[in-house]
Length: 281
Image 1 (cartoon, rainbow, N blue to C red):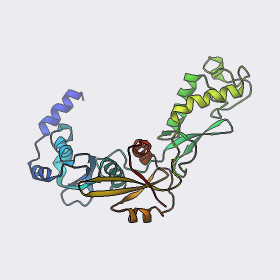
Image 2 (spheres, one colour; image 1 turned 180 degrees about the horizontal axis):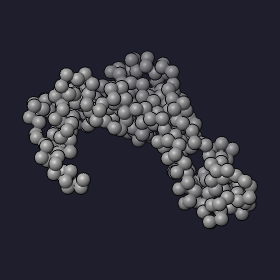
Image 3 (cartoon, rainbow, N blue to C red; image 1 turned 135 degrees about the vertical axis):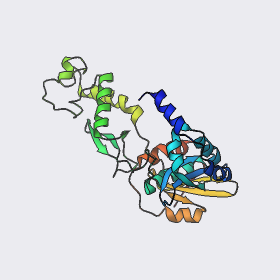
Image 4 (cartoon, rainbow, N blue to C red; image 1 turned 180 degrees about the vertical axis):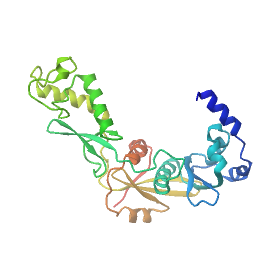
């Protein structure tokens, strides 16, 4: 089916959902999360977030491609937050908890893979049980995608997959060296030290940031009388609380494993000097 045909059929099926107009009009124009429910359903069809809930809901109503979702929606719930960071964190948490039908991204805690260097060799490791203070490179969906990324990196920088420990090493030179995709660390054309230095330089842009604090912290957001303290430790979101005392109590939870989704959400605000950060004992 061509894209034009698909859009034409959607336009034929689309009918402005008048039953949602009042609910959208009553939605607040503030940051937060919204949940779309079907008839007689306790589980949401879709969960979204925005810095302006009402504006985002209006854009849903105007979007022909979302006709199927809107035809099934009977009720809209919204949860205001004190800012964008809170909305992002809450959306990710609720999607994992509620498993809405129309959300594909963030539905599960992804068991991502990263690269780790051990004695000059590249290891593909799961991030599930790792802490935020290990030196890791890249976030990949699975081992296959991680291996493919390393192969592309090897092509770009003349690295040897055998020396890196990702292919069988015979000591007599690999096939990639014969076709001039490897600079020959496997057969002595260059030293392993030279190869290692080039590997480290190639991986530099992929390096994940260590958790930059000795323990848990709170990111503080406030808006129009609503105040939230988002508690975080080792890139893991532990919840949002209305006052510092509750945030400090939450910080006593055991440190969690590295969380790739939280890392991507939090990296920019945590590294930004403008973000209010409170160290929690």
